[in-house]
Image (tube, rainbow, N blue to C red):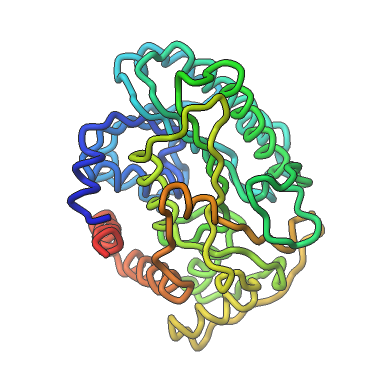
Length: 351
């Protein structure tokens, strides 16, 4: 869909985004603002200053309520006054290893945070659609098969279990409370790469931090296979989901978002590709395995998204990595990173 058509379909829509200061949320806020949507964010402020959401231009353009998702009911009147048509729920504790370190907080944020959001939204009459962003790790993935939306849920590690619960809770609210009054979409995606990710325990930011500091990088699971996909592909789905009319039913529509199976490669091979594409000759790494459980193989099918909302990945893995490398190079070269981020977005959505 052409850029100008997308702008016409998105402009003036009122969209409320939880977790809009994070990696996915900040990119989503930027593109929706560019398309003319009126965006209100609800999120904790990122302590790491490198996040795009801490950029002066971001703060100026994107209004954000800085608060914990479990306190959202205190801001109910402000949300009502904004009159959102669409709610996108991204707020979460997103890290597997951190879920082992602070399990209680992970469940409090991901499980009760979702409950408190959906309880608050019951009183916001302007809402027409809710999009819940969970994870590819919601599945009981024990054999490495390609997983579809009907595959069994049940994450093993605390993070995955919390996202499975988030998925089930959202389905329950749609089926028993919201019913046909509000559309609901659950999006399952993971292993998202791209510029602007500064989270801990993530392979991409770890690589570029190490390169900048001229240090070796430690690799936890070199043979883990993941469906690597660029953040812009996820944004593309969100845009399509916003403008697509969902089926009138008591159940949410559920979509996996995944790249082609060619992009399902081992961590070690991803590192080698980055080294080659970025021409990083002195790049060294050390394998230091972690005893904590993490899924070894994740493969998703996004056939349902292709059939229902005409979703189709635009980027192969090499193009995704090139975009990512360019972003971090520009960041470390002290470019105007907000403007550069918007430039990358315009180029992607113009094709």
